[in-house]
Length: 295
Image (tube, rainbow, N blue to C red; front, side, top):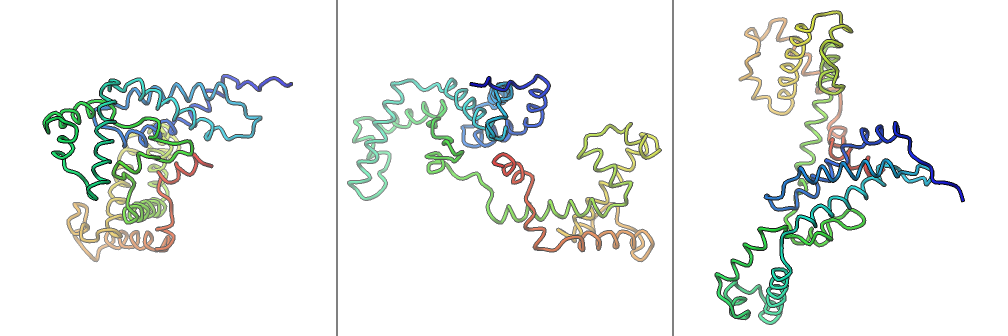
């Protein structure tokens, strides 16, 4: 029997850094299904610890992508953390189960959803006591934590009892369109302005480094960034809300002047860079992150 391949310390650090977004993605996914009083800081800590443990125990020779392996470990750690924070006592859980059983029996016999008063009469308690039971339950983690997510990552029973937090199809298409226009607006910028935008916002490069590459001062980089952001704002408005251009503080005073012509040409470049079909088929950042997790 061969020994298990051990992950080197440098590889562990690299795996953790590269897959850190998985922790925040999973915390957001579970956090959206929890009561507002549940803080996510502890969940993030538990998820990061699970990610580190997954990196240390990862065996690449098994052929399983690290992202898929780590996600399972992270989800398990998050559920364990939530279970430890479940404040409901056994007696409270027993009362809730009895209440639910009576509610279901009444619904079956009446052929409709019973009222709170009807459930209270059947239980032999007052409406106030029944409402207090609900208040006590909602002071704890009110979900069955073992069904927040199932083995395949789905919502399980939680999907059936909680309102969906997924974006509507319309919202998804609008997000895709905005993101595609932003991409096109950046690509249509003058080369030096595009370099500054990518460096500052996508590559996390310091201004000093950008200044050295472009042969200018750091203050000039700051000016270029501000100029690029103004162009991007007006460029997006030109496609998504043209009426906003009329109120833009950077609207050229002379509608037929050189500045106005340059801006009009920039807007036309944005519109021509991709088709309507291409924009709506471009995945959003969240969709791309979800796809990378399962890839």
